[in-house]
Length: 614
Image (cartoon, rainbow, N blue to C red; front, side):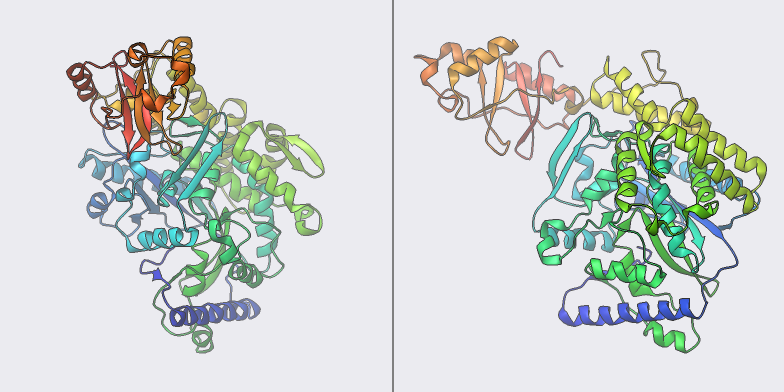
């Protein structure tokens, strides 16, 4: 949010006071734009780098607070999860070798973080979604101990009135409920900022919306979540659902998620764009304010519009309009929030250069987009790109065009001209756009990850395959090789995994289960067909209630067809946690002379582990 001291609005009086400051900020912004005070004669770029912290075994390392103490620099800050950090990069004027300078600065920062992390036996990883994140790492105790995160989490839960639902369907499917917003912590991005003048802001914002789908399609690298193959850029669906308050939308009168692409073109006036967000979304948080912005402006001071920025910081547009003050001058910028972190810093800076070049190279024919194109096609382009990446066919200029054709024949030439016209060095412009072209002709991050994961799964459990992917990402990032040249992982991979093994790495997740009221004779036949000797018994909520074995069936007197499972199952079931060491499972199986252990987390069945597995 950019504002560290925030709190939930708890009273009518507090909401009234906040709304007064919010309205004063809008009035001040209108005056600033009307008087031509917005900086127009310089264009700056900036970025925020989010990153993952992992331990020696490639699992999330919840050491962000300890690492921040060692870094001791305000440019490094927290993210919502204890295993994430953010680097705020210094803004640069868009000219010359600015992207090369950005690349060098980012590498230096990451090297510094890695050196300090090594003191804590922690590594740094750049990727949209860390493959090794599991449900264990999404518990509330993994949330960073920062008041604003906990205030946001508490408020979101109150607004929804129930747990958070997550349902994403791709090649596989994830459907579950969760008790916090920490699913947001799965996402790490490389957020690019571009300063835009007030006179052309809304035209530029609409163009940013128009190009979002095609730009995203060549930048995807997050096809996996919890070991499931989902969208090419799963972050888009995951973030949308993790900060969704619409379970109580009848109360809030909100028509769209707080994480959203939007539902229409931007209006002609930048102040009206901010007004729309105030109209659409209820204010969630407040802070302490020093005077009213319109009064400060009347006194000759440039206000920071703190209330408006706080409200804007709880609305997560994939292209977000931002207001700021640099060296006493107010400016506007567009923040690109859909680009993923990684796979390498070279890929990230290339993504940014491509986007900035497109933004600055907009041909005249793409002015006044709201009069020429249907916004629903533009929104569809973005969602399809998130789902299918480079397999997307885009609605563009009245045609349906394949991603590779649109990128190579239309958009990359526009981006090159845009960079050159802004004074960016020819060699740098060519280099970074060549990184984009190489992905078109070879592979992007999602393609590499899908192919590698499938190859690894032929001889590895899901958990080991995810750890192998994470280890490979780290190796390639360290070498600085763009993802288009990464070798797909196969049997000959040279990645060492740790000797420590846990139940969740070996257990079977696709468990054949029965219900308490199922017919015993029918279950006997199912077990015979599947060649299995034990079936856990669950209730309608998935809570483990017992277990049925072939021994139970054989020893039951009477006609099984006349009995239900509840009458023959064992109710006192020996279970194990998914995070116990594999040796513990082996000991329990031997000690109790049993063939399987249901794996249970908080009462719910999550898997089963057998003698064969260990």
